[in-house]
Amino acid sequence: TLLTALSRVPQITLNWRRRHTGQLSAVTYFLQALGNLARLLTTAQLLHFDAFSILSHSSTGIMNLLIVLQISHYSTSKPSVRTSGASGTAVIPLGGQDRADSKAA
Image (cartoon, rainbow, N blue to C red; front, side, top):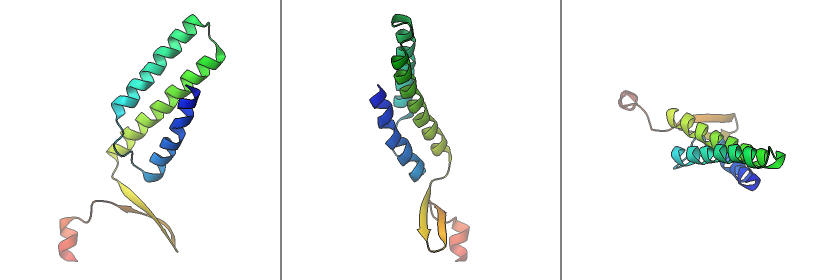
């Protein structure tokens, strides 16, 4: 499960760079986080708080929750594209212009 936690890092980084999560399912990652919580509780009970198991299950759960939070955050924010040019980095909203703006131009 520690390997699973590490495998979430590229996905979290990609989501942050792109400012959207694409087709990721919040339900899937939320259920995985709940599964990690269940594993954490049963591991604590059966293995008497084995440090490595606790660390691996909790870190995987935290990574899954981070992805759920990203999905929630980016689904409510307006999508944008980052461009970089000579003057620095600009963020351009997607979706085109408003109709009033396009008639005036």
